[in-house]
Image 1 (cartoon, rainbow, N blue to C red):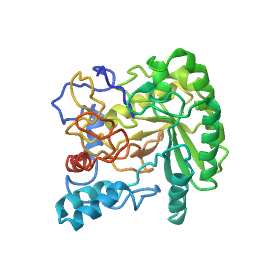
Image 2: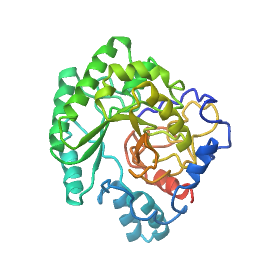
Image 3: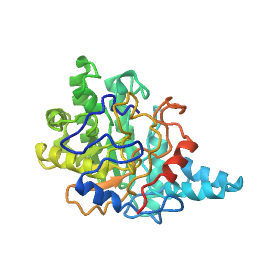
Image 4: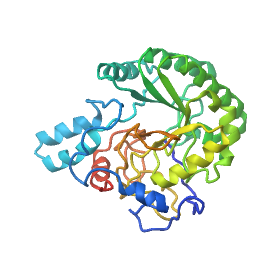
Length: 341
């Protein structure tokens, strides 16, 4: 997935950048929040907190078992910091039903909530690392209908179309597709909300991409955020907790006080410092962030989530595999570099 940080701005309103690589940028409140991240740089982070489902057969879980069998016990133990935490499921291919059914069955069995990502909008990622999506508006409507139907009566939290609205704002998605995209997103929210136990969060990018949250206000409204449960921030990105929350509060005030969820899967050491062309794509020295929970202590933050699955590549940059493919060496680095309590 493309995470636009091509021009890494100072973000003076929210955080001061320019620290050495591997250090997070934090406001005074952000420093305190980041200091509470649980777990040491190696070993398990402990049982997941909250109500979200943990996939027992994730790539990370399989990697832990393989490394144990190979005698790489320390690496396996470090990787448990990923494998034992709940992560979002990104249904692949033209039929999302099998992946969703597997996740929701597991969640219902354990009385937990599945976290799902709907990522198939036409003209997705405007032709970059995660290019693709449905071939037409009607195909997308059918895909969303299948997606929602597969959830059924199960409890689920759906992050809707990472990048789709921010790519309208930054001009990456051509203007002739904008109105269709707004319509499809609005329809998708309405369709998903027909499922009785589904919460929907429309993606709003990250503070390092659209630096002025007010630029997202009208696009989010056109895309139907009023009918959603809220919006999502920092999907697949590296902004610190304090930076995300400050941005989210400002944006929330412009869209009727909507709540938000935030991706902390890889933000334990903040973003890669400096004005770098590919700061968003497999940046070195990053670490796991705050473990997922719905017990945030913040009235506007409905959940802290690992939406980007730690260890899945951002794309073929810095020696990585294709976007979304499991990369065990990168996963191990994230685990070893996790922000210690």
